[in-house]
Image (cartoon, rainbow, N blue to C red; front, side, top):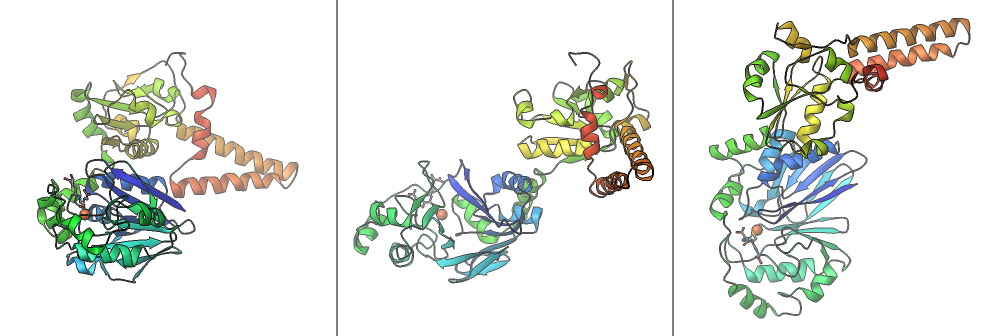
Length: 421
Ligand SMILES: N[C@@H](CCC(=O)N[C@@H](CS)C(=O)NCC(=O)O)C(=O)O
Ligand SMILES: [Fe+2]
């Protein structure tokens, strides 16, 4: 099971990711729009397929990431029916069960912070949104909040759960991450040992400033993405999570003028790079491309163009860099082959490296031949080698990946001729 507690520093919001091991299906609780790219990258990195985004309530301090994420993943969105919100795929009520993979999440209506506030119970973990915070609770002075209702929700619905149940709040403004029902019953300053009247009095005299984004967030979250302006920002967030493709011609139009403001990374082997390359490219072979290292020299805002021989390796490189947080990653379709086919100028070295694609053909061909010869002349087991290479080539074609190329890239003849390169 994958479980993550993610944090948005601007609104101090916690977003939770829960995934089912067996099926790789996942849910996100309370995603934040500005963090949609982070969440999408994490889903990709963990190989998860998102089924639901769940809202604990209509938030007043941030816009939900649900719609941006739905656009990018086909996940369904859900919010409580009592929120009176539009545009969500599912309206939840008390006692509903949300299913994903072999997992169940139970919906517990906990009105008070807002009339539609709910908590989600998954196994021994309770996601309380703003109903119960660590050492505190959500305010009740806007969005139809009610201190009486909140008192009832916390004491009668949440404090009656097992004391071992872990409390994961919707926010924390002091860096605390998790608590338990037992701890909150005993230590929560707002409610532990307090009568309803005392609690209501405390809530009525908090005098907190309004959340900074309330006028943007509440209509957006109520509209569920209906507003045109919001749709636009959602698409921007979704677009930010993908790698852009350009043709070799487009690169030729953009790159020379952008040198100094952008990077062109050639992810082929040093030998291929030294044979022929686009001027100004820097060589970081795919098997040595570590995004975190690159980040120490290239700012994440800088545009990075990725190029290889045919456009396969550069696609992997671009996705790796994008997922690691580089914001403008561009992949060159067709690679150096397309660049040369378009008659664009190249830098040629002394070396004549055999292209990776030809090396794979030569290696696969010789191994198959060897397998058949060994099978016929030495031992029938030799045929297995030929069959293995055949299966490998089929898999490589079907998945557009090539393990053999990765192994060949490490061979000495594919390394740089000069020790410094
Ligand atoms: N300074 C924050 C205030 C956020 C705020 O008021 N949060 C609400 C939840 S939406 C709350 O109930 N806070 C409880 C508290 O501050 O004790 C902002 O501007 O966003
Ligand atoms: Fe809230």
